[in-house]
Amino acid sequence: SEARVYRDACEKRPQEYWDYEQSVVIKWGKISNYEIINKIGRGKYSEVFSGECIINPEDHHHHQQQQQHEKQQPCVIKVLKPVKMKKIYRELKILMNLTGGPNVISLLDIVQDQSSKIPALIFEEVKNMDFRQLYPTFKLPDLQYYFTQLLIALNYCHSMGIMHRDVKPQNVMIDPKEKKLRLIDWGLAEFYHPGVDYNVRVASRYHKGPELLVNLNQYDYSLDLWSVGCMLAAIVFKREPFFKGSSNADQLVKIAAVLGTKELLSYLNKYGLRLPSEYDNIMRDFIRRPWDHFTGSYTNLAVPEMIDLIDNLLRYDHQERLTAQEAMDHPFFKANYESNSDESNQN
Ligand code: ATP
Image (cartoon, rainbow, N blue to C red; front, side):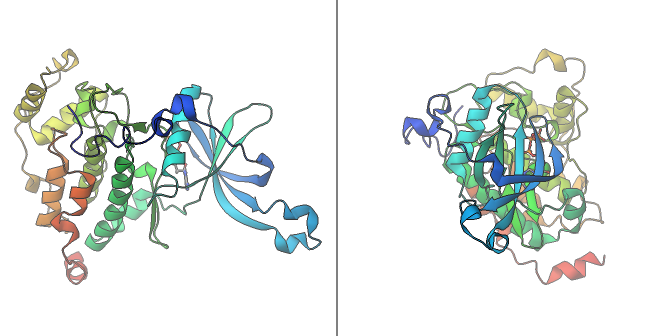
């Protein structure tokens, strides 16, 4: 199985673009330019702080009125935990390749602690509002706007030969005041090469695509579009997360309970796979649920175009899913919901 789009995105670029084990040249910045203010997040692979960056440190000694000249700029400091250097190089190379791209978090600098030698990545800061507060306020025009922004980021990284592999609300920073969206956490991202077997232990459980759960190793960019489908379905059907598995195996059971078991088996059949034995005692024969099963009268977001969009993202068969570009071109994003959104919210 190969990607339908951007198949040769890496191969058409010079080897140093994608060969992160050979070609990462780190230009270390000065750690003294940064000051930690407080901790804002803790992941599996890092501790994240909000901080300040001192711009023009050179000026420091030359200007008498240094207080006025010295500018502080907010930033985010991601201190990596000790993991394999290979993983650090991959995240760095990918960030260096994508920085400056649309709606991709910008890497500003890389510094290293003197004693521990642990690298820290300096990023632009997004004044993120927690998705649990923000998403419930979304009306259709907000979904059109923010999901277009997310798809722009994904279409860009895919066109650059990179799969994100961890798309989820926690990795989509949104500053609603500035209407700014940035895709963060490129720690699981990987270069796409046709025919390569990838590790299926990526993404977080609720956003793992079926390909990961049935050990289909030759997946591609379309994995990220499944995760987008999960995010949209959760918002539209007011069920966060939409597929809430209690384990990786149960995750596929939860998916089958919506998309059907027969449909799962024909997906497996198409790619010459069998349901892994771990499902022997837990998979049941589910009948596919029509989407209107989830559209109670309480949700005004489930307009026909939205249902069609979700339906075309949440496909078992990764080759059937819309690509990021196709999703952006979907009728949902062309419709005008501005006038009716107020009205329908009173129902
Ligand atoms: P995980 O194990 O959850 O994947 P991680 O160790 O890979 O996390 P990140 O996901 O990059 O680290 O960052 C952890 C958290 O820090 C994010 O979920 C977010 O809340 C916060 N964060 C990271 N970068 C930024 C940023 N640029 N602006 C604002 N907040 C950020």
